[in-house]
Length: 286
Image (cartoon, rainbow, N blue to C red):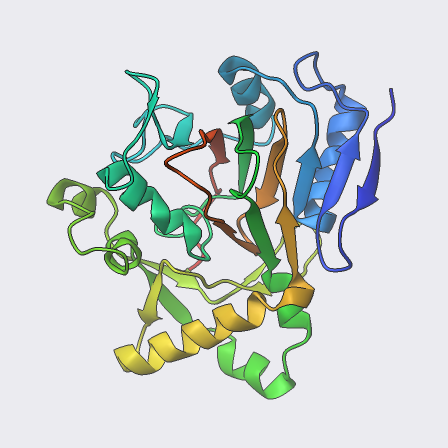
């Protein structure tokens, strides 16, 4: 079977059809998917009713998988469960449960694992249970935003290093969401502000909520610049909004895409998402 696809927006995204991930993807089709991933940054696969083992097996074809951090459900495993449902009781969490508060950080524009020394290449999110309304995921491309930057700003950004810090981003929600053990697990790390995809040479802006400040600059000045860069990336013309259906699997390029979850009625509707994350191959900055 030969896969087909349709582009979702002029800036990013493709919906890929004629793929059966549970049944197995041939090497030629996998090579085509990899090409589409590098070209379009966000790939949508509909009707993929997969289990954890099948999701992990497909994800591993792109590279080694990250383990989850301490605060995620399923910590230490290759599957992060992002949900408003208590896994032990199978009941919806109360609105003020710390897990709901903690996961509200996913509603800020961010890129997964930029707070790690070696940031992630990609994430794959499987919609196991999705609400009938709300709970969308928005994506924005730093690649198109870079292409449209004025030359003077491109020159200014070239070579800048941002410090990404998980405790900083979660602290924007509440200052007690990250404990000392997790601070030790995820200390601040340097990341290049401008990254290049080695597969096609295209540059992009690398920012988002985990980016705390610019190395060598006044902290507030750097934060202002990083906020301005994020605002550039998330302009409507650079975004795609995914409306979840049961069985959707969405894959995105963390090297060049920001994303955020959208609110839904957490007290009423279940939302259970399983995420695998493809580890990077090296640091972006010294």
